Length: 166
Image 1: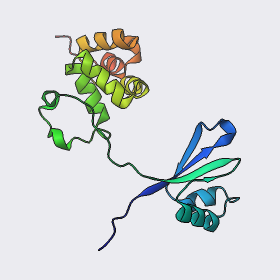
Image 2 (image 1 turned 180 degrees about the vertical axis):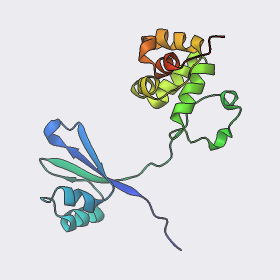
Image 3 (image 1 turned 120 degrees about the horizontal axis):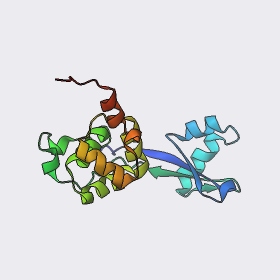
């Protein structure tokens, strides 16, 4: 019987900042190379045998399982009628998702993308990445997020486009 490989990461909690600062390393070797005062063999033996975190006055170091499953936002399939809903990569397609939900979704769905992506990421996308929103959506977005039209990339881009006068 072959055991499944459990992917783990090294989580380092620095105590000098009141225990609120964390670093995550993909391997214990990577941590020890970055911080040579910590010996790889010593830490590896400690963490392997005791199955408890290594701790001193400076740090708390532990091996934790890597959580790879990313949840998806709770959005209706009808917003994405032209996509295979089950195959949407919610992280990679964030601009499309944000644009679609803002343009076609309700305020409840707006709240869901804010919860999923974070307000900072939504604002960044609006200001720097999203190329198109309808005029009505631009007005609503400005009211909801307390922005001006000039702050939105889609609005400034539209202003730069010359339209036919006929």
